[in-house]
Length: 157
Image 1: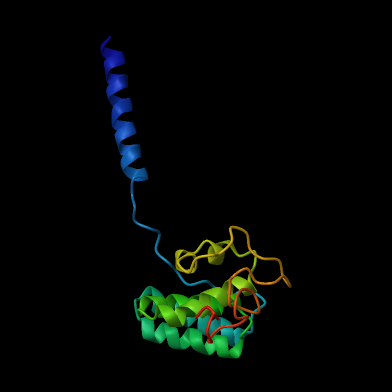
Image 2: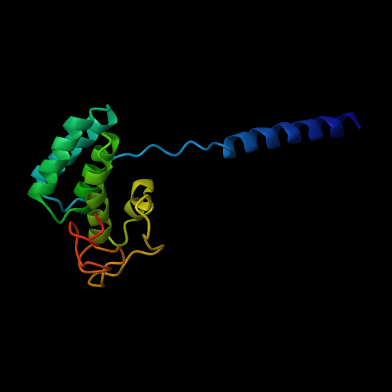
């Protein structure tokens, strides 16, 4: 009987500890993405330095590195995503939005980008990425939705 009581007490402690660990409402920290291996070496260096600055909380320096990476290779989803992260951390959500959306459209199967809380904040992001060449599912970007583009009335920005 004494052994059974000890086992039950131990199980209760485990259940409490497990539920405390699962009850955390703190989201995982957002981190910059590394460049794919086939990326231009100059752009890889910009993203690496930007990620270092981002981890250190130097948002403006990170933003500058990511902006240079976007300018050097505008079709790199990771560069747009990282630039969006830095701008988001600086409080420039309006400036970050097009970069998150561009990253999602450039990388239809990228789970980190598509599951990113900052991207989900902008709503109407489908559960599955759009296929390459398909009409974007995010209104106002690239011809989809009302207005057909960003910037103007009904353009989504």
